[in-house]
Image (cartoon, rainbow, N blue to C red; front, side, top):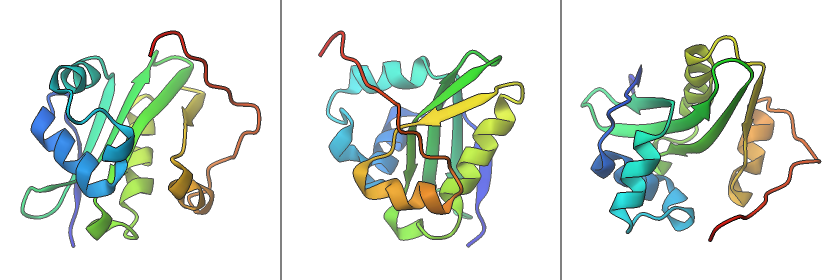
Length: 135
């Protein structure tokens, strides 16, 4: 299946929601809160999208960055029907290419995706923390 990868800063909420659902990531994202999804997309710095040969979205990586030192990939979602084809790894590569001066690329894995990140060669960090300011 030929896949194309592109920066899509104007990705629609409906397509974003579609890939979150198809990937299984929807259980961890506010898919019923359209205004929040709109803000998530509008305030992202890098949105890389994978599409099949019919133009259907099969993956997305949504990140925030300062383009100088750090990048945080907040969402990496690949349609379950397309997983196992290197799409997630390529989305991360294309994300890093979009911010070439960044020295630290981070993400937080969903519990079921830990083995993917290990197999993709990501370094596992023990000293990562989450803090909550607002609910």
